[in-house]
Structure formats: C-alpha cells, structure tokens
Length: 198
Image 1: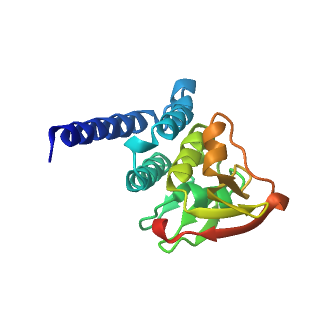
Image 2 (image 1 turned 60 degrees about the horizontal axis):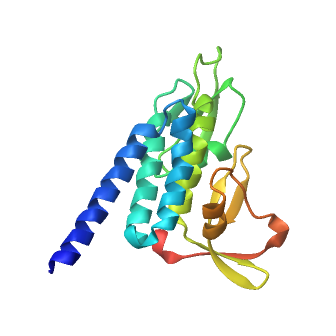
C-alpha cells in the first residue's frame, strides 16, 4: 500500500469518527444546534461523496436509528420486547392519545394498554427533537428507486409525524435538508426497493 493511499484511508477514518461522535452527542439533546446538525451533516456528506462510500453511509444510517431507539426505550408509556432496528417508524405509524401505553412486541406487532394517569413525560415529547435525525438516517440508508416522469431516481421513505409514509429522492433531500419535504403521491409512478439495504 503506498503512502498516498494510506493517507486517504486515515482521512476517511478520521471523518467517520467525527461524524460518529457528533451524532452520538447530538441525538436526543434538546437544542436547536443539535437538531440542525443532521441537515448540516447531510450537506457535508453530499458535498464529499468520495469520502464516505455507500457501505459506510448504510452503516451510519442503522447506527443512528439504533441511537434513536436508545433515546425512546425508557418511557413509562412505551414497552418494547425484543430487538428492533427502527422503533421510530413503528411508533410514528402507531400513534395514539397520551392515555395509552404502546407495547411493541418481539415481531413488531403493536398493542395498546389504557393507562389511568397520563405519563408525566412521554416518548411523544421526543419526536420533534428526533425527526431530523430520523429523516437523515433514512436518507443515508436510501434503498429505493423512485420513478418520476419516466425517470428513475435513488430515493428513500420515512413516516411523517402524522403516521403517513412519504417518499423523497436522495438528490432532492440533499438540496433542501433543512426542511423535511417529500414528493407528492400523484407525481410518483413507481417505487421499487433495492436489495442492498434489506
């Protein structure tokens, strides 16, 4: 291995470490700076695609979802059985009033349990602070081919705060990462899942 290649690999490792440490620190912190860091990383990664390959992006995406899982795990109105890769999606699709406890079972089934007294703090209170990180993780994972006007685009899906599945292209989100947007359903001709993120 020549010296130039070693230097490039060392730079890539340092960048990976900086990105990893930054999201580990920021996810779940209640500050605007922490929430804005996810779109900032989107801009950085998009401008430096040569530094972070597809495999590293996917690994970071799953790691961010794991961090989000850890932030949501310990609330009195949420009970989780087993290991789940993406608790946020399950919760966004299963929202109820604050007088219900959500139970996520081992295979992802969800049941609800009435609680007598509203929980003093709820996983629902975390959603606004985690939304940018959730969409950022989904952007990193990609995994979809979305056909618009006869053209195929690499894309991703996420569930919005109202429990609806939305689709966006990788490119479009990278252009406007500071607002969460999606493609109108009537513009989408086809969505296909790619094999590499399953």
